[in-house]
Length: 311
Image 1 (tube, rainbow, N blue to C red):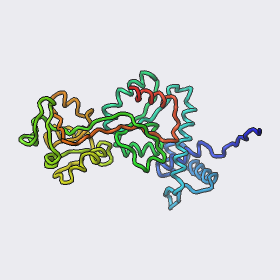
Image 2 (cartoon, helix red, strand yellow; image 1 turned 120 degrees about the vertical axis):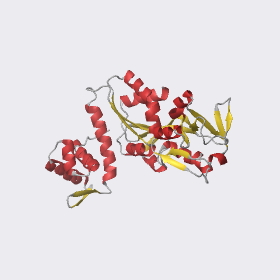
Image 3 (cartoon, rainbow, N blue to C red; image 1 turned 30 degrees about the vertical axis):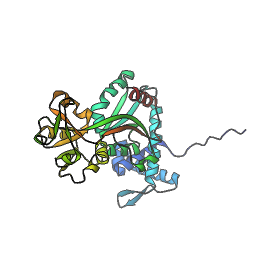
Image 4 (cartoon, rainbow, N blue to C red; image 1 turned 45 degrees about the horizontal axis):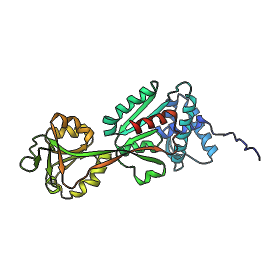
């Protein structure tokens, strides 16, 4: 049996790094600043890479570089290669490793901090970068290989599934809630003393102002699918970009809100907020772990997975 012949790649890591920087910044001048290389060295590396690949990656329009359709698939592969190279390069210097973690807003603000504490307890020298945004934005960063692993509240879009792995992680419950003794509930909702909550019908809720998260958030995805479809004739629905702002607006009695139990738990326990149960509505949802299929699963990646699955 013949021994496999090793072929020495002609593409260099420098060429890939230059290409990735140009792709992200949009110009050779900004890439030269980011990489601390001369502009001529950056332009030369890009030209050499295009020659090796035998295809253009950018279209030159005057001094501008517009991405060619070839650029995106090459960018994804280049990010994966550079990520694995950096893991190898720093393996002994930083044995704990580096990890880029993404989280949708509710998870990032209320659930992730104690999990990170456990990660630092297991790996005191861990180098952790965080990105917190709504689910759609976080998944987009995973697609671009800018994030090693993400914890999100909404299921990725079907189009994401070509490059993304996902695993069910936890269940969470969204709650409709109001300021205690809210003017909107007076003489409208029945109060359940045993359950310490108000009770509404869907028809009653549709007549009240409802504050929800913005489109693109995991929280809004579930509200759209499991609540708003039952409220086609709702009078007032206000979209708010931040959970804390939404909660504060409900506390000011601007309307009712709908957020994760984790966001409003302190207010419920303090008695400043009260749950509003809507007959026939179940707002239980699944939280997901997502990562890119090409992402190198380093030792710190495996440690973090173990913590969030058992933490």
